[in-house]
Image (cartoon, rainbow, N blue to C red; front, top):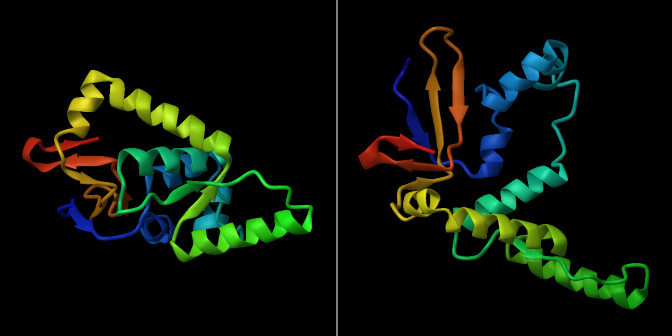
Length: 166
């Protein structure tokens, strides 16, 4: 195995990188080698769209491991987008969110994510790990020694002085 090294990729860059295999790609291959080949090799199937569960996970990650001064996700207002006033309110909100580099999320999803992040922070072991610092949401790449496959991972937390990957 070549030594693992850190790369400074955004989550979007990490998920767009298809030359290195990830655990989710391996799971897809195990479910269907044909679908794996079509999606990741032949590119005849479009990349997966983010599901509500994926959005929820991304929001919780952002709450626990912020990557910038402002949150990546903001609560979308409930507006009647079928009315002219609602369309205008939504357009103004969407423009402001886009200008700030943020992503709107439904209020119920934000509430669930907040509860989940609070639950993690209230767990004594998780709280201790989160309090140790370390590098969060940092991509790691390497070439596997046995297979020669170029690999990638996006651990939530790497605490170097403890040689710990979460």
